[in-house]
Image (cartoon, rainbow, N blue to C red):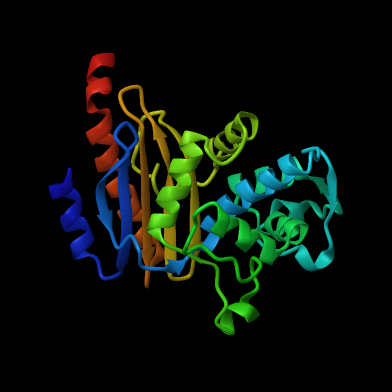
Length: 262
């Protein structure tokens, strides 16, 4: 597997950060640029998801409490904006934030917890390089040098914790996995996989980055994979690379069970 992935990484003209982790042994099988920071894009929505559920749990709130949606939080690329909703339940906001990467839902949830409190929570659970510094689609703040950032090591740690259900109660841990498993954006890790694979994952995209990271469930062996591409001149090239690496990993881990099922 390594001899197939390494040339793919070396031949591209953009930067690649990646990890592949077997969950049975919890060992990194492959890693590249684990500690180099980069723009998180919509990957930041995964720790926000966990943080909001922790807040709901700690404060004994209902998932079906409704939040007001103020006009300043309604931005493009949002089913919330498309529907011109004035209020929405916490549950709906969390689901839309992940499965369609809804930016309006994310902004409402950032206001619900508060940016500073979210960053305190990220640090408390062990995310050392992940920081929220702007709302979604706030390009003015981005131009001022404030971006949402993370690194591959933090994402590996976060998805390992989600897999092992160490951050939340069993009920809310299962909800996190359920929402991530309902992801509707499949341009990266699932791009070249023809099988009906179960994957709990999240993408992130901006003009010069494309990321996809998540948990892959197989009968033979579960694994966590993250591929993060930065300094892209062509976002589609990043998506294609992620798809190719993901297919190699899937074939490596799933070859035995596919043969036994034929």
